[in-house]
Amino acid sequence: MEEIIVWVITVHSKDHIQVFEFDTEKEAKEALADIQDYKILTEIIYFNDESLVGL
Figure 1 (cartoon, helix red, strand yellow):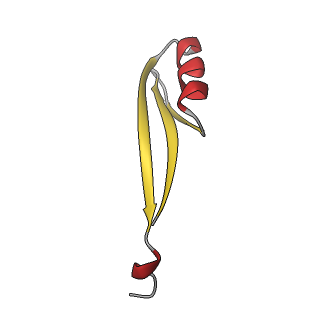
Figure 2 (tube, one colour):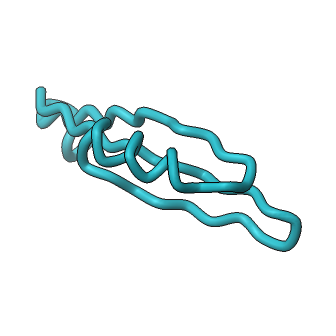
Figure 3 (tube, helix red, strand yellow):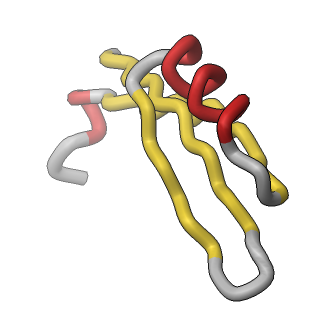
């Protein structure tokens, strides 16, 4: 089973929502420090199980 991890920052401002994706936790946390609006940092883990392909 293959595991892929990405880090996502969702930014909520008065007029819109933005989503930014990062490959590492370090990159995401550095960007998080510079964002002024309400923000959420999320770790997303994708699991790819080849035994389920074709079902």
